[in-house]
Image 1 (tube, rainbow, N blue to C red):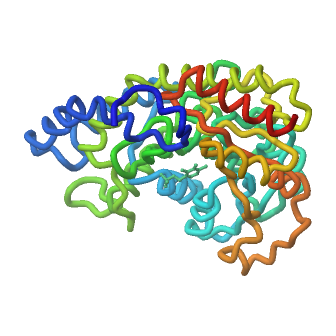
Image 2 (image 1 turned 45 degrees about the horizontal axis):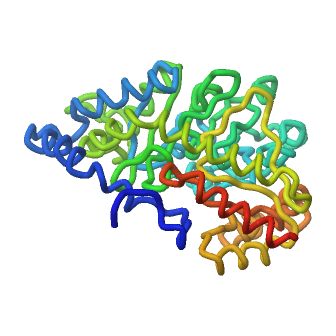
Length: 368
Ligand SMILES: *Cc1c(COP(=O)(O)O)cnc(C)c1O
């Protein structure tokens, strides 16, 4: 397949084959790491961490094995074990999985009109057992982290979908006490496999994360604490550095596509868009809108060659994995209502104006 715009007959979410155009260049960089033999916590990882920290605007970035591990290790460092962690239900399962892995009980606060955690709802969920708050920048749209500052609890941002997104000119991952990023192949910034990054300005958090990701070894011969094997591979750091150099272009293109969708669909009454927090600029990992007759619309778009998706069709608090926590239908009214309407239109840096126009024409035709 060539690396040109996607064929009109297939407007999809998965665009990874288009990225193959620069494969030789990246392989060359990976080859340099392999030839150097510097494979574990190598110099190239240090370079990626320094560049990523600078990009996000924090003192420390620590490469780990996945976005899930970034959340997990940050929660470990925050000492949440035995307590409760408040998070948003509008997220991927890994946010909640990491909370459980870290030995805490997940508590959901309902969402606001921005589809992100509602600070007013967080206030009601805080109790003596609360150890931390984990806002999720869902779809890449910044959650209003400023309004969580007043609770005097540590804030860990799940920024897995929000690399490069900003709130009042500060990047997601620099707004709370800690930030967690994913480098999964479908995220805006990615490696060729799994990877993640923890960001923080706090020296002692950073030091603890570095310790825990490498077995708890403070040096080769001193086993300080029992830790984990959760390093970002040095070969993957070479891949991450390559794509980091292009992330601003990736995000800028996604922003253009998203504003195309918004302006062309603004008069379509059965469609609406989530509000953005004041001063927020999204990374548009996903383009999510709310639509009447959502399932029919999805089927219509798919039948016409547009890979519209539902993130996610089933409520997270009612999933079997969370059965033991006893959540009930009706616990999270705003979230449960939004789940019936959310639909994700394709958005990625290999789409052009013609594809955006075609998707919008189909949505308009459907509702006409
Ligand atoms: C992708 C994602 C994760 C998990 O990241 P992995 O790298 O796949 O482990 C966590 N939270 C959110 C919101 C995500 O989108």
